Length: 230
Picture 1 (cartoon, rainbow, N blue to C red):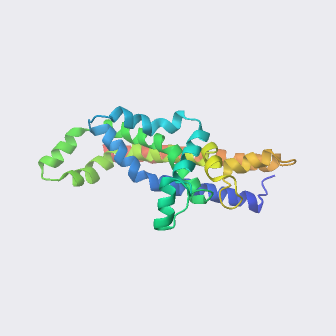
Picture 2: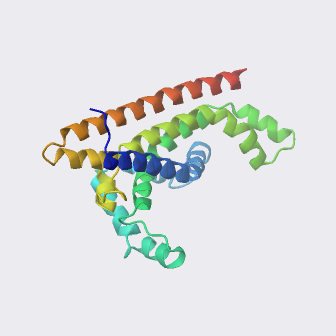
Picture 3: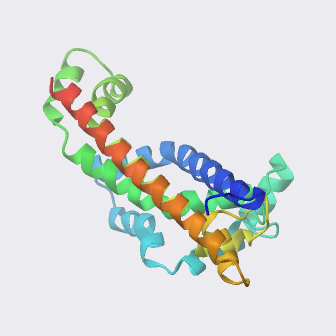
């Protein structure tokens, strides 16, 4: 029953690749936005917070359509990136990675923000008192203290990216070997006669990957927290 076809292996490999690239590329932005939301006060903060969390409440198809309008070949951002850097998103695996990053971004930011808000600010103040500048304090004090939340945010975002369907199929379609990820491959198998076995195999793989990721993140977060406490 678990004799995977080449098409199924391609879907699994592409899903892992797309989710990994998308989350890795969005991590610096997630750290920056989480820090701004956790530590800064400014007009429009509630609006920024709402925009960050918008993908959680919008239908994924709407998010995919917005990405297509903005990052498609005729979109303002997509046309600029293609002409300037030769980077194309629409109907490419890069677009699938972008859709995965956008859908997982709110979960990443929320977890990191909560972790930053719970850190002991006195340690940061002590670092500055001893002569460390803001960047040094951030990289050597704030980030290590927030590491459990960062790990949790990465894993939650990865799990969300791995299971993303609506935004992906709207933005980059369902092209075998290029944009057909686990969810779109499962959907394809359910639409063809005799495809139930393939859908079941891929669904089982998705469950196993998600479970392993969650367990691993919990173990890493506990170990990191214990090291920080020690």
